[in-house]
Length: 316
Image 1 (cartoon, rainbow, N blue to C red):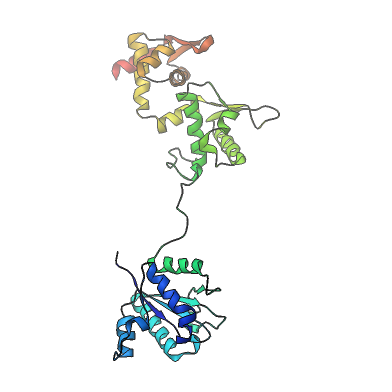
Image 2 (image 1 turned 90 degrees about the vertical axis):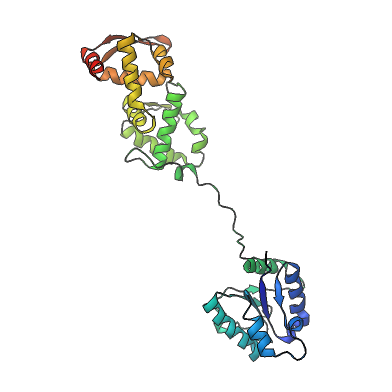
């Protein structure tokens, strides 16, 4: 990396009490400081060295403002050139205030660094180095809370939080083969850790209002548990289950053509959970295509198939 060139403008009265030590510290930290006593040799033209070499080649100009320097016409001339360079070439201008002095009008709108202790100014030095090297001191950007991230909702009318809650409930009940989703289980979900409880309850209420879930309430708690409705399953599956319609046709074909009637056997044949199959069977039954008997332990059996379903499959 090429060392950045920085011009150090100051009054000679400040050299021994601050400027020389400051310039040495800058060089120790990789800054190529242009300081008059290091750069101007006997016989050199002051104007040419300062304005054609020092200021013209500088990436940044540090102006040390003190009771002495603000009175110096030479320093003010260097400041004027620096302001022009800032506008025309983007030269960075860094005022360093070491006295309780009046800041020149041309620097009033520029953020400056104040050095209160000339013997101990490491914090100010680090700020100056960050400005020279273009470093940022703000913390790294983390991940946004789950309620503000993730995919955009695929179901019209749901917010990101509603969608997240809906997908979580469906995932637990369908993929987890669970008959219901308890309130405690919902609250323990990592995806909800950044969502206030009231916002979670509001989303549940919205989902219930749209008939996607059914909420079972109990005295002494926000609720007992929630259950995904058949209507909610249909909307979830159509939006988020890849090849959902083909899976429905596959289940119907197994029932009609291969006489597979038990839900657990159907689930095994299509490589889905029993809960998934049960929801599909409920929808087929509600449409009048089949009749299903349900038994203890979660087993169900298809015992009648409509003529319309047989014809639909044969004509497909």
